[in-house]
Length: 308
Ligand SMILES: Nc1nc2c(ncn2[C@@H]2O[C@H](COP(=O)(O)OP(=O)(O)OP(=O)(O)O)[C@@H](O)[C@H]2O)c(=O)[nH]1
Ligand SMILES: [Mg+2]
Ligand SMILES: [Zn+2]
Image (cartoon, rainbow, N blue to C red):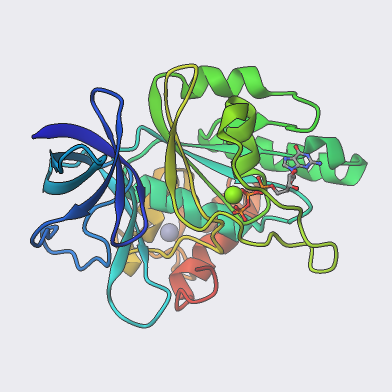
């Protein structure tokens, strides 16, 4: 029996990095079920597992998944009620966004952030491709940075083309397990290639016509970093499905709305049109950003289908 960490999962096969630093292609034996959770993949990237070496062909059988510190789920895109575990045991989430090529909508950012809040995983924002930005885009970038840093999310300006902003990120990612998420084409895989050029991972240009990425990365995969720690590259997502949040708890995951809600007249205020709502007053006075408030209302009232 050996212990290892799952670095890639394709649904039926799992690549495991053993504690001794060897790579094994594994399958699972028997049924693993996460309590009260219907998932399409019982073992995910980041899972610590016990496995049985199968001769010396570098294959093995996973016999046990050790307790998870946390995990992130995504609802399966079809209508089934099953979820998919994107990754487990994550120390920090990074959302990579771009102002153009592709353009990341604010509501997408907010859906990501409330998911991180719900899972209690620290999250930060990376704004990549700053080399492409003219005055308009820079203004937009600085606006987003001011909104999100005021709430408490650290923001990083990055250009992989010009190699600016890398040091600060390495500092943050050093010796941790981090997941990089974001739309297709923002540069997640390019970041990993920059950290370790020997990885030589596949990337592709954003389509000229649609200005969207081409979904090049298809499975989450964890990579050991030369500076210590692991970074998980993940497929471009349209959005994070909001998983099992009650309507009346969604605002708990908007930190600034939650703080303000304590001043609302009614304890069960949803901050829509209730009298004495302190959240709406704060939006009017500019203390809460109107785009954030709009995301909140959209998420509250939406059927969740748009950003998935
Ligand atoms: N101009 C510019 N282009 C960049 C930068 N970073 C990445 N790119 C380009 O953006 C394109 C998409 O990069 P990828 O790394 O494949 O994007 P991804 O986020 O991994 O995309 P998916 O795997 O589809 O989710 C590539 O052509 C990169 O060369 C940057 O800082 N500036
Ligand atoms: Mg990629
Ligand atoms: Zn209210």
